[in-house]
Image (cartoon, rainbow, N blue to C red; front, side, top):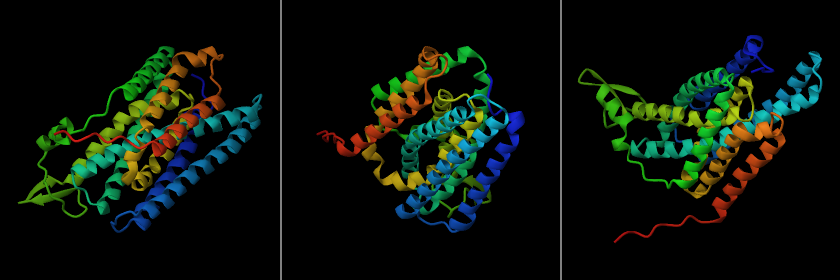
Length: 332
């Protein structure tokens, strides 16, 4: 697989970007959230706007940088190539941002089950994002290796189609975390407490180190992100074969996930139809891998992909707000 931004030549781009990411995270935790507090909807909305603006600002910068880089290399159609990779980043960011809605449902479920106060939820999500960055980097690196084999495209594409069909057809069922294998395994490996010790992940009880519900919730959230990455990473590889674009679009979406959660946590049930839009997006990108790219001479137009993805997500979001969710009648 020939890429435009190989790691051995653009390692410094990754390094500079990660310095920026850690600087933003340090500013977030060390300045704005030094003291544990409940994040208000207003604060979450401001931070959501900040992260989205940074992502879109990077997209503009990436376009001009790619155009300058391709022109300096004497690449034919340098401007068109730069526009294409910029649109691939935007499409990948949009898909990852949309799929992160599923993460929010899990966050709400976990925080409710463990009775995590609002003041401590940001702390869990902060460290959860640090872990997510590591795991996403591993998945993306593994994906870039596997994508060198053509048959992997059909495996990934078939998996995305299957996942999309399952999401659209299978009815959601209530989840009982008390029977979750991961939580039972954590309780078996190390002693845990049923009560919190302020914002600590660990505490001592009679001289013995115990994990608090904050730590158990953090592990569960990290594990759930690994599960979601199995869908989201191949979905972005269906749009671009550039590991640099896959990685940076993933990171920007993850960085804005906390503020998106605090902004939408109280109204996630209103987006009850969005899962059907996401299901159709997964089916579409799966079809791109197994058929559409070959049918269009090796690359389905990225402008069409962006239009289709944006239309599906936008229309089902609007439908969710316009069509009220049906309430099941209580059983006698």
